[in-house]
Image (cartoon, one colour):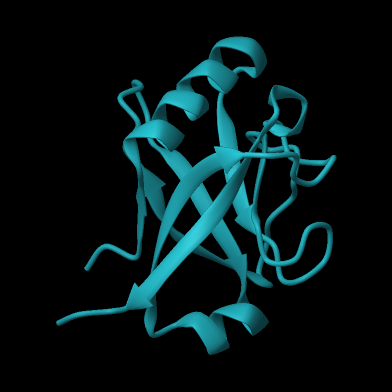
Length: 114
């Protein structure tokens, strides 16, 4: 069952960021640094480990998927939700790669369906 998805506009932004920065990854922020926004980093720059859950890989039309992670503690609260990464105009967190582009990633969520 798919837990994460991406809108067409967000996929386009991710492809653009990948051209500039190389492969990227997401970590769903747990309230620090811009609320609960998905944070985009060069792949491997944000260290994941036993305290994180791999939610899945986004298919954005590249050779490989874009991994999406979340802390285990946060996953306990969000385990019943399906997340869609979208992008909107505006300035997000300074740590996320899209910030200088005048856009910000955000999460749209809904209950998981069987």
